[in-house]
Length: 193
Image 1 (cartoon, rainbow, N blue to C red):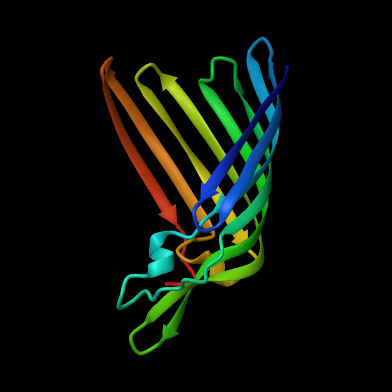
Image 2: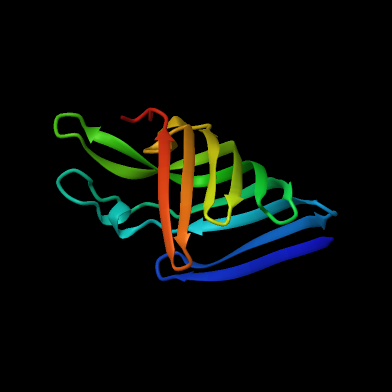
């Protein structure tokens, strides 16, 4: 009934040195006669070095910033899954909160050419949730979807990230070796567009 997933990784970066990241994920998985449920918690850390694009830019519109620091963060997540024991119908919900340090953000520095560069943003909090479901109607037809919401404390870190997304899919399996997928995604308006 009690389970534990854990992991650790050491990243050796030539510019920023060695960094350990880890995750700890205890969860309960219980199967009853016709239903199952899973309740889990996750704590994880991250180290994200700036990319070559963020450091060196892409002239003339993205200017270089050689002084970028790596982003680090830690996150907490609570997950719940509930469904039929055979997994023919599953409902999921998750809630998360992340604390970021030196998160990357893009800012325009020349409003005539719209050239900009990436910068670090000190401290930032992120929170959100996700609700989803999958349903296996029969051996040939599956469908499902999810709704995601994310909110960041500092608006400049929301570059190209909408607050809301809705995804849905339809999967048809007409033959044993054939799979046809249709997918849909709705993305809410971004604040940076």
